[in-house]
Image (cartoon, rainbow, N blue to C red):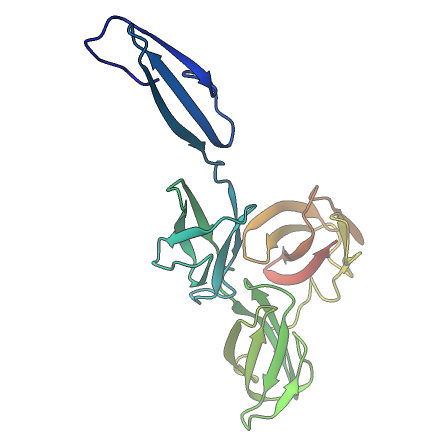
Length: 291
């Protein structure tokens, strides 16, 4: 409350309008009026307003970058208020939305007209790098090429072109290609692109599968658990690994091969996974969809 200092006979002070000192004030503006009556009857009045601003509470909606190293991320501040605010992003932008952000850590400071501020840190992510792995080439008069795609954002689109630039296949593992050199271009769901040149002839061919020949995976899509159907090699021990599409190891098991070999990795989140089977020096990767 106001302090009164004078040389008059002692008087009295009272609050006749307002909430009063030491009490909680509501949101908005409250008027406080104090009076002072001196010993000789002189009245003095002091009035002022107490303004309590609503606490700024904002949400930040972040959109990750679409491809590694690409400045395509964004962040937007959402405030449940019609009051004007100013924005200061750590990269220098000053609008409600920050755009063209690369993956990394950022912060934003939001200020009201009355200089109430709100600050929040956030992170813009990016998908793992799109990568094409050559698994095997089976060649005689023609060639069958087997590749695995890692990273990026599924699903993928495939374009195989020959040395003349003609498109010869749009599947992951093309069969019956004439011997020669091919360019594979993989485009993921975000438009990220990876390409590689593959020479498919007798000099680059790997031997055909013997122990893993004809192996099938099912059900696919699955709810998580699945089986491997082997055509041969019963009684041998195979190593089974499950990786995320980004290459992170999720599950590993050594299992004895049977006609139907059940794999029970437990709960898997919906998405795409790579199941790799290794048996007697052979290695085969299959894609598994969990729904």
